[in-house]
Length: 301
Image 1 (cartoon, rainbow, N blue to C red):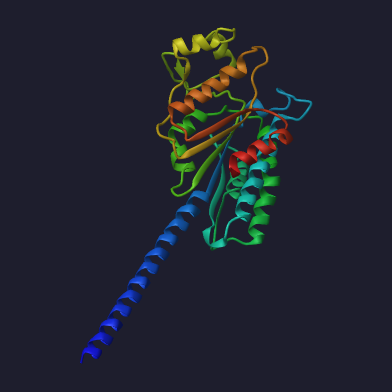
Image 2 (cartoon, helix red, strand yellow):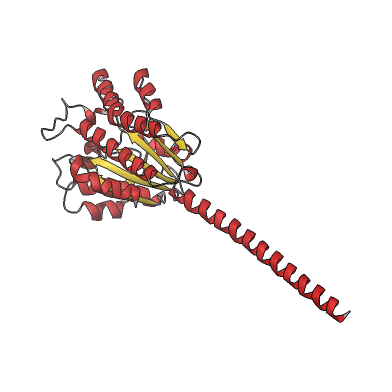
């Protein structure tokens, strides 16, 4: 009788031990899955472009012998798309959930431009990813942006850039996705102006032009002291952009003011800080070959 009780006890202990180990394995597997999903979410890219199609891209008004400014934009876009494809190539298919798209503000009246921008919207996930899709994306981002700029220049109807309004009313809805790393690429010369968005509150504005910088007397060696003391800058357009990273490319200051570049960069930096942008870099226009590594490092690291 004692032997039977002993055997039953041993079997019960073995059963409970096995059950406990099985439950631990299930819990561990569930934790590993959750961790994998979290890591995957952090690697999901959501890249947006905001193009400034104001007269800054006009090769007649602002010619550049080294490389026209609109062609620099096209090359920057291509570099970003290459980084996006490189990122996709490093991911396992089951974790793919990555997006890339392109915006303007205001939207061009040319329907062909809007049609092309729609064709540059890609949402790639494990259900639709193929080598053909990635090849199509690569081809689209190599060719279509140039067509957009060619059409905008041919139209010759430059209505300014309402970048401030985009940040106020659209950036959170258009450029920020949950469980993604959200990156906005802004292609601009650094000046902001639109006839329908001219707001001034004390020394804060929704616009910035070379004329404004001169009128604020930010064109001498004391510009920074004056800017800080009298609180010149952009009006904050929104709050808490901590889930957004912004890369500004193409800053092109008026060469009549030796301090113009620093003033523009401070305007943008203070603006991003006030809106609590998660991470940002602001780069002066340069040959795309010189900025290639900088752009790819921003996106891939």
